[in-house]
Length: 291
Image (cartoon, helix red, strand yellow):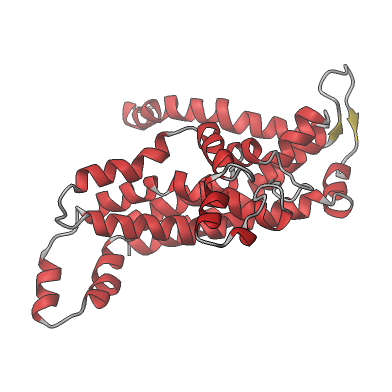
């Protein structure tokens, strides 16, 4: 065999080996476990076929809510977190005094761990001493005060606000890097032609940020589908199981209820939903960008 044929595989092999060992084989083993009823310690696993999947779809009242919460979280991340990140990037790409400091301020929450963010915001939502209820009382809106994390209709949104504060730094930095690669020539030409800022945004900035959008949207979708730490640390999936997402429900099934097969089935649903959402998007956008 010619050395020219082997050489590319030698470069690919380390990454391919790591991918197969860390991602592909564990995924196959999880798929295998999803067909069994097993508590994680018993010497014998009971084969149940697709029962773990059908039980989740037909008999588990939490699973549909977890799927809906995951999709709602993804939609919010793609619109609110990404939108605020883009807006901040455009503002901080201008020649503002102290913009380096502002970049650091807005990026800082992203470097904090989810548990630290959860602790900060749990205190802010405290019904008796929390910042939000105290602020509402100060402006005469004390009747609007709530136990934000204890009300099923508010809890998920309250946690998402913390996620917005924690997450806007990443898309902001990526969009900022993309904006700094755009030449000023098309903006100057558009200004001479009388284009308005809104038109320059839609017809110059957005098209020239296409590659950045691909990266940001893919990262945002992956992050939103695997969200876990913030929700678990702030609400534990409650109240009344109203804030569970697939990852938190998988954890509860696997490590609290010792239903390894059910937890594995939930993780396979999570993989499937992620693939259905992400692969068509990345394929379409990358194909379009290389036309």
